[in-house]
Amino acid sequence: MEKKPFVTLEQVREIAKIYPTPFHIYDEKGIRENARRLKEAFSWNKGFKEFFAVKATPNPYILKILREEGCGTDCSSYTELLMSDACGFTGKEIMFSSNVTPRQDFALAAKLGATINLDDFTHIDFLDEIAGIPETICCRYNPGGDFKINNDIMDTPGEAKYGFTKPQLLEGFRILKERGAKHFGIHAFLASNTVANEYYPVLAKILFETAVELQRATGVHIAFINLSGGVGIPYRPEQQPNDIYEIGRGVQKAFEEILVPAGMGDVAIYTELGRFMLAPYGHLVAQVTHQKHIYKEYVGLDACAANLMRPAMYGAYHHITVLGKENAPCDHKYDVTGGLCENNDKFAIDRMLPEIEIGDYVVIHDTGAHGFSMGYNYNGKLRSAEILLKEDGSFQLIRRAETPEDYFATFDFTGIFDDYASKSFTMDAQELKAKSKA
Ligand SMILES: *Cc1c(COP(=O)(O)O)cnc(C)c1O
Image 1 (cartoon, rainbow, N blue to C red):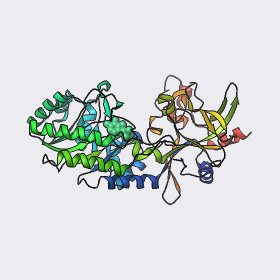
Image 2: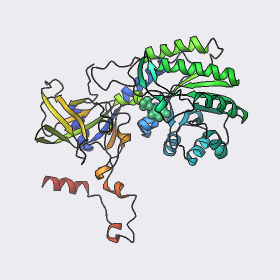
Image 3: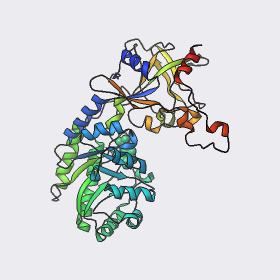
Image 4: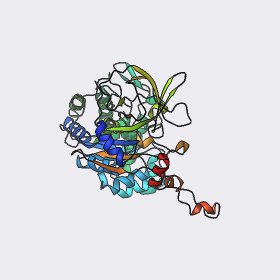
């Protein structure tokens, strides 16, 4: 499928007058429509709820939009819990799915009344000691081995650090019940970024069968099954996108075949999607600042891997559109790079694109999840702004760009470099502009 940006060159020019590139921009309309499709696809299940994986796009404005669409949050850390709380998510609207969990994180999750999803058998005692065992509790399951769909290996849970084994789950549920837990959930995340409508249905079948087995063996009330994240998106134009309605029907079929006959038709289905909810509705917008002709043709951007780590980290494909040249022939081959002193700082290698000139604006697609949030400050690079393209076509700054002051904020120069203690690191923007023009 052709990948079309949700912004035009004219819009980007308008925005860049106020907020210089690079920036991440999010499409409110796309986010809302997609969230509504997900909700509709699972409307057959009375208790259905999506808990948005905050780590994908930890921005309060995004969380607020998702909250208005009926989503909760899935947190994995102390600060994500704080952000959910600040955004008005309360109690059972928050899922806490962490691992290697610090004590204060469990304490805060318990204080907020979040639903805690234990990653490990030893966390039963650990949590009990910190905050007691709550009435509602969830355990993360790891079936081990390979995870297959139609004999294709999708991932290898046996190599993953997460979750309880089956015997641990059985024993864990017994212990939790003894210590006062009344409502139980089961959670698993067995494959990431799946572009296959079968993923959730196959996972659901495993979890539903496990739920029936655990219910029979321990007599506990299974209140919900959390299918977690992993529903992916087509990063490449030739990929076929997931059909969320077909996915919903596939899960429904397994539900009716396994849970309903076992008298467990009241089980709520939860999801913890991040990528599916946000990735297509975010772009990294950058400007071409340099071109270099050596053994290969290089296009240098004002963005770098510090703004989007996925290509450098996973060799991930992100589609690129040169704004204003959407219909021009892709007859030039480029490596599109950032300016880090790391040769893997390349957004694209040997990519066929229209002829590029300095000053062109490019859209790097599908950066709405695990994009900005994986950013870092290597090479002293500063994090970009985040902008929301609202439904009425106007735009709003939802996170300002970092300044050098932010970068230095964690140092205290007092008594060491006294000259610096009082120094302002931010050159006045006007002064900077004047200098760069001179
Ligand atoms: C990362 C994560 C998610 C979201 O994963 P996506 O691939 O973005 O859907 C959900 N749940 C947990 C526990 C996670 O760690």
